[in-house]
Length: 234
Image (tube, rainbow, N blue to C red; front, side, top):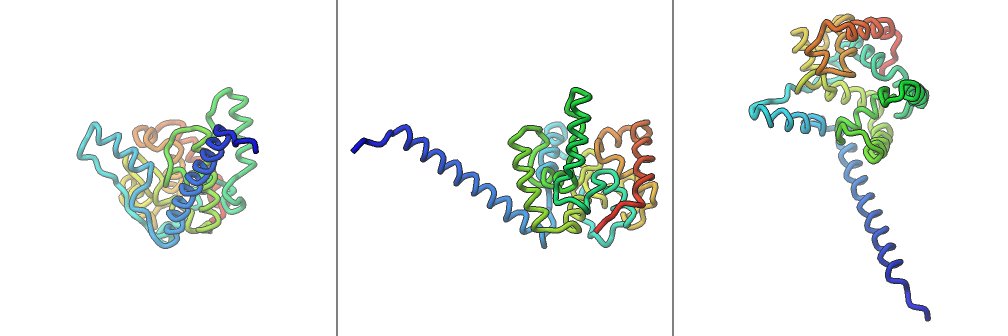
């Protein structure tokens, strides 16, 4: 009988070990997602990473983050965020293939990676569990978590979570903290213009926090205002 190739056996063993580790990681993520059905997150991966960076300079820095239930957010604020970040939120299953194609064509024309085409579900997956870095491994994990979110939580809970963990300034997270920071009122009392402003800040919140009168932000506010009344929300 011909002896087995030891290199082949080693490679096979490594394959099964890698597969087992991959499945264990996905099981861990799935358990975390499942818990989000009834438990609100205390922090997110993005919050922890940003807080660590700021505390390296200011050890006393604290997060400004407070949870707000979906029913306590003004509907116009939800519509504004959907209009700004994911117009087809109610129509896709986590991935907006039309948006991805449009982003790819824009990046190709510009010769740089500028537009991402990420949906609210994808952004939530990234904010909750991953890092801001851009690489294929992270994008692959983001896609898997997005599927978990969409199949486990549903659109209303996904939007509720996103609105509560999105960044609206340096160490400023969630629409509750943002509406009080910028307008000194709860998110249930936001006016259409205030809602449009908060939604327009989402792509670059720290820059717009420091530059609220920038022409880019004003242009985005007008664009959100023109679309938000037609946005569909859960």
